[in-house]
Structures are given as structure tokens and as C-alpha cells.
Length: 316
Image 1 (cartoon, rainbow, N blue to C red):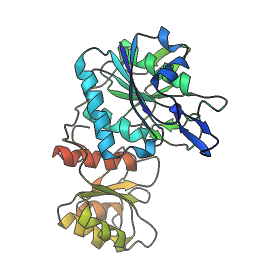
Image 2: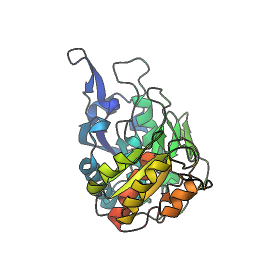
Image 3: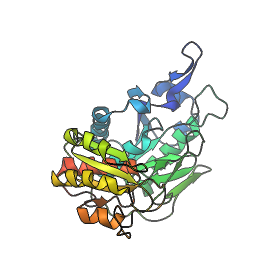
């Protein structure tokens, strides 16, 4: 049995001339009816959990979704779970589920880049492919995944890298873990071990601050009183303007973690430069390199670590 959990997003939308654009329209039953190959994949149940645009998924809503998925996993009836989701913040939800849930019961997220009002609507294919992956025995133990445009991604590495293309997702710090082609699911390697985090929620407030040329740290100082930690979007391999260093020291001096990320889409922070503001200098102050994560993933990882009471990146 596959549990189809519909949360909204473009896959559920159609154009409304009076509204002047795309708006939520389809519930789960309507989407299933528009995906004629879906019933042949596996028996399924449908749950209309919500009809949210992705940008409406705040921390409380996201945690409530995570709790619902965990409850379905724990119920024992579902062989796999499919979650439809808006694409703009799908990567945050996939990362949360991938880092905090039992990987035994696969959770497959998908969505669409076009609405049912547009030619070439990709919703039915993505939904059907996601169900195929959720139902495949080889998916067990892989945890949260994202299926989009025939590619399968680990939920901990996926990111939206193109604003409007049908093939909008990639893994900047990894690669697709499989494919869905002509109804057949293929994984490139066996599932590996993982240690989920056990946070109490998403209440930790973590700022994401891109550094700019000549940055003097004023923005960092403004955020420090109201946030529990910060992820820095530095240049290149972790270098930043030296004028921001005193503000970073103040964060660290108050015991608030600082994660050093890069504004580059590909590659990791490498603390190789020891000049003032160089990545090695920032790490010596106490900042932690982001590791193989995008800035959005690093921000969520830090929030989860703070909520779980563990160091950043523990068990990853």
C-alpha cells in the first residue's frame, strides 16, 4: 500500500484569469484522476493534508508535515509514502525528512513545474514515477528521496537549481541516485547506512546571511540578539571581507554557532587561505565549515542540530 499525501504546490494549481495567475485548485482525488497510469503501480490511499504554495511552508507547518509523515510510517500499513509539494521549498522538506525520519519506509517527494492549464504538464508523470519509486522494494532503507523529470535524488542532497525548467532539480554536492524510465526504477548503488537526528522541533532560529563586498558585519550584529546561530554565505572556498570578522567573533563569543558556507553552487568550503578574512582565519575563530551542503541545507542542518542538542553535522 502506498500512502499519497498531498500538500499542494504547482502540481495542484491551474490558471485563474480573475486572480491573474496560478492558484491552488486540485485536491488529491482530482490529481489521481489525472494520472491514468497511477492505479496500475500499486494500491494506494489518498490524504489531502493541505494545499499550500511552497513559500507558505513555515517552520511550524513543516514540522507538522514531518510529524504526519512519521505517524504514517509508524502505522505499519504503508509500504511507501509519496508527498506532493511545491518546488520552491521542496529541498528543505526533503532535507528535514531525510535527516530525521526512519529510512526503512521510503518517503518520495515530487511536484510539478507546470500547471494543469499548461501544455506539457509534468504533474502526472512525476506523480506516477514517485509512486513507482515508493513501491519498489529497492527503495527500502533509502529514506526520503525526490523524484523529478525521471531522476531520483537523495533528499539530503537535492536542490532546485533552475527556476522554471521541467528538469529543475540536481544534487550540487552529489549526483542522482537512480532513474525512472519507461516505468522501470533503477538505482545506481545499494542503500547506505544513516543515523537520523532526533530534534524536538524547528524552534531554533538560524539566520542565513550572504556576505557582500566590503561587508562590515553590521547586518550580522543586528541579527545576533534574535537568533540562535547563523550560516554565512561567503565567497569561493570560504573567504569573506575582513571587516566582518569582529561581528563573527561576537557571535562565537556568545556561544552562538557560526557555519561557514559558500555562495558557489558547487564545491565545499576549504579553509586554505590564512589572510585576514580567509577561510582558515574564520575557522580558527571557531566557525564550522558547512560541508557538502547548499546554504539552505546548511541552515536547516544547524537548526536541527540545535534542536537535537548535537554538534552541526553529527551523524551525517
